[in-house]
Image (cartoon, rainbow, N blue to C red; front, side):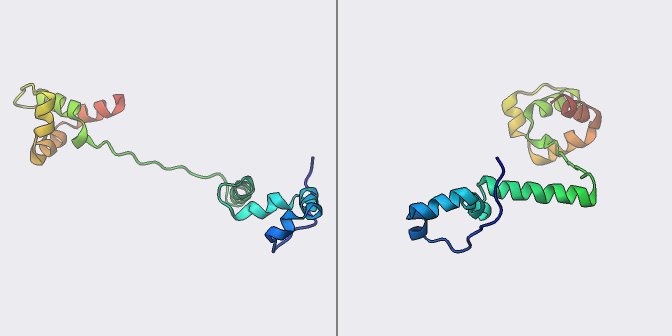
Length: 124
């Protein structure tokens, strides 16, 4: 069923909507649907945004999607355990000890072993 695009009311009041003939006219011309175009969670709002997006794609071409990921190695105690195990000292630390490492130690561990860090990130 197609919507009729002839009657769009700008200033609708509660008394108008309570009038059965006016409500039937709103249903006939689909004004109830169109009125909600400024309400963000309404289907009309998202339909309008979709049309704008498709128009932008038509005008500007396909969009490019760019994503930057951060590894946040300082907050991965399992990685810190592994880095400590394979560092010069070679000692194994517990999870609690990994949480207690100071910032300088963590920075040195992360900086000195980029290969292990990259492999861990790839498999995370």
